[in-house]
Length: 394
Image (cartoon, rainbow, N blue to C red; front, side):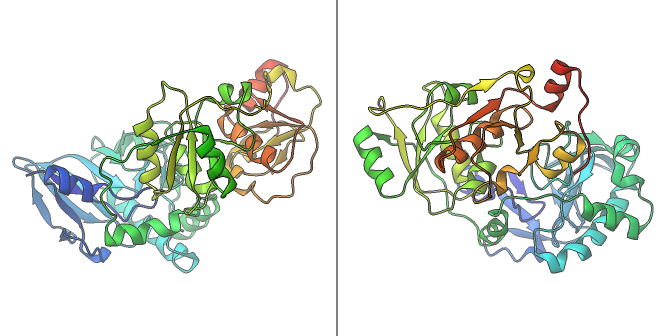
């Protein structure tokens, strides 16, 4: 018997457990207090699931969500590891503000006690979180995907905060912004999303795409930033295809927006569809399947040493900006950029590498900004190229 074990009502994505149950016969196990309305086995603290030689032992670890479970993987009496979900993650703990402001502080307190419970496990215990670097559920980014209890005791700054009050204050101060679609996915997951099946990108002619654009559709160009810079269809939004594609798609476009994809032929069409569907986007009309007959535009990319005294617009998250930025840079998070009062001035747009910056530049170009360049690199590259120091703080 195959199992799909849910640690919590995920906010990043729609649950895939329903699909696994339908296609592979997986038996879904999840928290009994989660209020899920689809077929599953509800577990409470201390319940066990026999995997046929190994055992999953459910531990209630509220914090990231109120109904959160961790699962210890046992071989007899020996703990092999723990699936920590969004409680303990590498170098951090997952955020507690997704259920609404009235629940944020109580859940942060619960997170403190859940972390202490997990810290009582043997140091050699492997931890397997569900959130890693790139997830906006994380209170801070982490480079590694897995860790051990012993490593986290030494390196996780949240575990160095000894009392409840200090933990809650520091933890809440560390929480940044998150995509607005996070607010709706938990309830969809509670009821169980529909099956994805084998959706695909339909090929569209240029004439058809023009008609769709006239009715309010949006072109989403998933090619690498450099390809978009070289030439792109006017009005297209650059969201390069990478692991964070779904998050930025959901952050920047409304759920009911009709989307037309522009991609390179070597980019996986199924991956594009999958990433969109896992956050609930079912309104992809298809992809442009022939050369564009109209004019194309460019947005130049420049090297870190070419900025000089040009004005810089930094679109990274607040925490990234505070930790080190080019002196004098204007700061607007990418997620806040639509509707932000950015003056129509010459800007070098930058992020950590160039992908988010190109997305930002494409959004600004849609509103009429034309004097834009994008930095091919990040602040550390600028510091290395110029020999100058980054500025810290807001």
